[in-house]
Length: 352
Image (tube, rainbow, N blue to C red):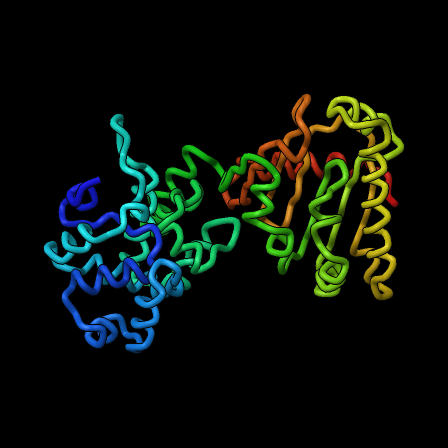
């Protein structure tokens, strides 16, 4: 990769990760003393000296990564060229293939430009993104997406919603309904939206599925107590561990007989214990039930948010894609479909 490969129309391709080595190269390119460079960045002289002395083993904090990005972006073309000439090749983004653009670098640039257009710090921009996404990124996530890691697809989609809400709303209505995110499997979903974030501050929690591991094993007893004591109403519907449907699912997924039913029974007992330990007068706010019907979906409804996973033939539930929808004022969409599915199964269920 040559110097010209990293400069396009006067814009430097983002550095994947700033270390002391890249910091020193930028200072040299700007032809500044350590003192002047420190003033330029708004840090102490000893901080710059520490970065440079540590070389590639030292990584500045996320907020300073962003400051270095800005310093590079605002540098004169000649300074950028000097920096590019000294930049370690291993830290450059992968070059575009012969057949097209480096789409990962394009996505990183979109995040950086969106934040700069709003004039926000990485922490403030993360908070803005969280209002659009179904999960909460951190300032460190923003820095990584701008410099070294390709941002997730829902983040890229959220950028247009933030910069042009009216356009994004029209597109969402026409193309995606109330769908706000898709995850390839349950692990990816729970990584982006852990149970403690999913249920935080909820007023209603409804779920129907098999053993409901995400809620039974992924959410501590203490948090269940806090949630119910704060006023939440919980209804959880498990596949009957003694029924025919769980046996059919065990055979379909290739589990030994009794494995899924045993896990489901354990989860039910765990949440019954949670319910029994609630203060008097609150136990009826945590309702548990079982049903014995063909397993079609795992559905979690938390206030206006719906997470739905289909149960696919010869595929384990944890490997199925997860669809996230948010209830909207306009009729239609996925939320009311899965809400009706839950309510229908709940009416058929047997209370515990």
